[in-house]
Image 1 (cartoon, helix red, strand yellow):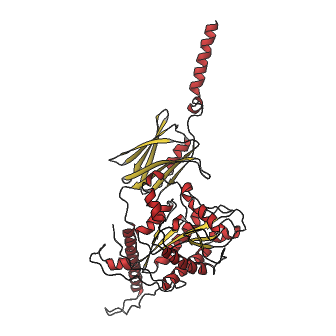
Image 2 (cartoon, helix red, strand yellow; image 1 turned 120 degrees about the vertical axis):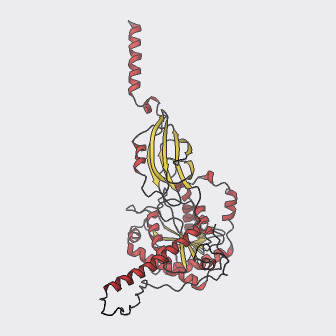
Image 3 (tube, one colour; image 1 turned 45 degrees about the vertical axis):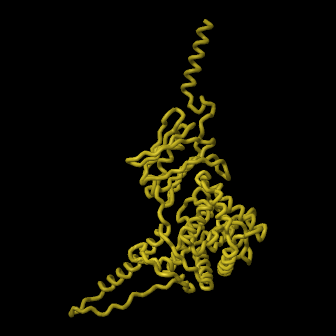
Length: 462
């Protein structure tokens, strides 16, 4: 009888174990998915899986059609993972769709259907700030686009669109004119030219020798060399929200909005083209922001931010340039350290930076001349910002900002306001104030160029 009871107990325990979920029988050995996020962009698309424990993954590419297959160990298919299916946007330039399934009892398989061949980078990030463990898939194009060529094409398209707009306006005007008895039409008045609200001082064109070859049909090398290129850098983005205001306004959103408006304002000058380090909500590592500016041989680099402080009383805009020694104040040092930590939150694949020593040496080559020119630019911009809002400090400050370390590009970092201050957060949210800020920045840049004409460039397309 005793043996029979023992056998029944064993069978009952087995039945109970079979009915329990795998996470319970494995004594919590499976990881739990906390959140899934997708960040599409023209530069690259990022997929992030955040979990309570580290995840390990293997991947391989499949062609015809292009797919990326990722096997994640120690994971069980659940509702959190299924959320990924609905987070891929139709306009994602790299991901066409996602499929997910339980490949083995301890392995979940993700299949990303690709719109183009990619060079994937898959890596993990340790917990930092508000994030726990993250498994990141970065999908880069196999052949990166030439950023300078993209600027030229963008300029050509804008000029063609403007010309077409004039033609359409003329056609509409002619169509409204009553046709007289004779075949001759009355003379058509020239189209009105709409001026911008506050005209900027004229930007000088950089002098350059003409070239022998055309990089694009109808676009001469001389025209390319005369182009003034300004790099605008909206801070943070993607996984890194930056500072957050009392009502939830995120730094990454407000500086992107200001940056896009400033791009349009500056691009209205035919001699200028603006290169954005990011034009959407995605993360760009600090060293890559510098590299982007150098690849297009930018004449200026302007990084946009909206900082926070421990207390809501802090207020006012600031302008910073690089320091070749100690910071100009403890506050400048604190802000620089905070901004330099963005890579930790945004998530950088350290393994992909193969020449870290060379990169560091390049970033440390900032010259006295670069800092001198940056101070001139900063002074002009600070003077204009002071006309539309409060200033935190009435002089340009200096500190070791990593994003300002392009050795051959005058560079400034603008803290537009303290987003942690309720009044300034409300201003930063207001499109009208954003417009005033854009006018101040554009005027400061124009005044700098009026006194310091850009150097002649020889920009080569790759």
